[in-house]
Image (cartoon, rainbow, N blue to C red):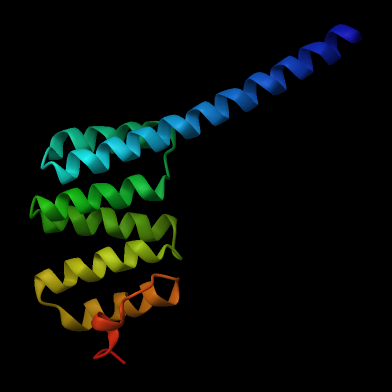
Length: 136
């Protein structure tokens, strides 16, 4: 009986440690991907974000950042695909709406951009007044 209790404690501790390590790994990969995107190393950035998705299938931040890479690459269809996926898995994630609004602005769809800027604002994204003042 003591062995089972001891084994259970060890198992819980190892599970906790592996979870916190995975969270650290995810944060590191996200940061490396963002840095690669800013350095115009788009393939490297996507690799980092896809690694996160291999660990955590519905990581909204990884999907969002892949979409941002595709915006920088001017692959707007792919970007839209990833932004829509981000919003599907996290419908109250304001940053996804802000990024999709930026994409719609690039594409010249003012109505869709306004709609998403207002959604982003609704979900807590700050400092969008310059984008939303003509939308209301």
